[in-house]
Length: 103
Image (cartoon, rainbow, N blue to C red; front, side):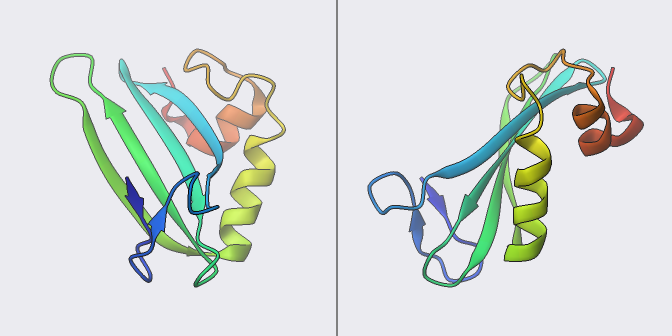
């Protein structure tokens, strides 16, 4: 379950606050997946980050809260990629999102 980092509301399909966008990238052999959740109660975004380590345990942590303008801009960027789920994608969108850190 994902909770809003601003107001602690539950963010999931049943509450009407589904994941708005996700993107995956490979950095030094590890896969990172960022998923953006918007909270209708407070208008902020929470980002769930899954860090799947090449050597080691998977880690899940959260970033935010992000203001709506920042979250909307990231979602708009992610939606421009045809394969945001692909950690091997090296399109311009993935490069902009992850910077020069991609494998």
